[in-house]
Length: 444
Image (cartoon, rainbow, N blue to C red):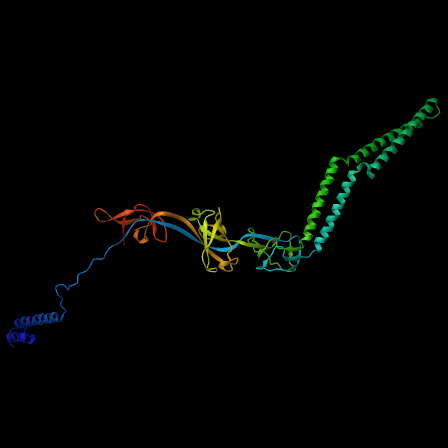
C-alpha cells in the first residue's frame, strides 16, 4: 500500500488549525503540534533513503584474537661487541746507540722495512773520542796487571832492596868502628866523647836499617794477592768499558732489528708525551727511542670492556673481528690479554673499563689492513643450548618485578607468573626460572 505524500498529510492539520483570533494558548499548542509532525515526517523520509540489509547481511563486530607463543627450548647465545684499534702484536723499539747528533735519516714513519735496513746514521766524532779514552784506560790497567805479575822484580822492589842492603852495609861498618873505638877507649887512647859519638852513629844506622826493612815489606805488600785482584778487577772494568764504547761506535748506522712497518716509538707512561721528531741535526741520548718496528705477521685489536662484562670473557676465547675498513667475512681471532686493572687514563666521569686484546693473523684476502684502523670484536659472553626465550614485550615490569601472562592449561584463563630473567639476546630475553617447556605465554 502506497504511503500518503507529506503534503497530503499536512492538509487535515491545516484544516484543524485555529483561525486568527483564537486564544494565544490555543495557538501555541497548535504550533508545537505542527512542528512535531514535521519532524516525524522528516525522520520517516530519511529512513526511506537509508540502505537496507537482509537478514543475513547485517555485519557483526568480531573479537580480536590473542597472540600467544608456546615456550620451547632453543639454542641461544649472547655476545658483546667492542670497538678497538688494529695494531701489531710485537713491536721492537729502535734506540740511539750513543749520545750524539743525528747526521742522516734514511727512513720515514710508515715505511715497510726489512731486517738490517739502515734507518739513521749518527755522527761519530764524540764517540771516537770516548773510544780513545777507553783504550788509554785499558792500556794502563793492562800494564798495572803485568807489573804485579812480576812484582818481585819490579823497579820499586829492587830500589827497596838496594836501600836495605846499603843500610845494612853502613851498619856493619859502624859496628866495626864501635868495636875498634871501644878498645882504644879502654886503653885510654881516645876520649869518652869520641867513643860516645861512634856509638851514636851506630844506633842511627840501626834505625836506618829497620826503616829500610819496613819500606821493603811495604813495597812487597803492593804485589800481594789482594793488590793483584784489585788490578785485575780494574782491568776487567776498563776492558768492558772499551768493548761497550767500541760497540756503540760500530752502531753509528742504526738498522732495523726486524722486518715490519716503521712506526712512532711508544709514548712514555710517566710523561705521557709523544717522542720528539727524529730529523738530521737533532741531539739524542743513548737508549732514546727513535722508532719502533711493528711486526705485522700477527695483528692485534685493542679495545675496552666495561666492568659488567669483563668477568664474562676469558683469555683464549674465540673472537670474530670485523671492520668497515676491510669488509668481508669476519676474521677469526682469540683473546690474548685482559687487563687486571681498570684503565684510569680514560678517566673523567666514565665507568671503569678494562683493556682487552685479541690477536689474529694478517689475512691478505681482506684487503690491505693497516695499523691504526678501527675494528670490532664480537665475543660470546653466554650460551645455553636449552634456553627458554620469550619476546621482550611479553615481560611486564622487567626491572622491579618481572612477570608474564601464562594461560592456565586447566581452565584456559590468563594468569600472571613471576619469572627470573637472564641475558637479553637477539631472539628475546632468556627466562631462567618461572616458565616450563610447553607453557603458553600471552603476548600484549
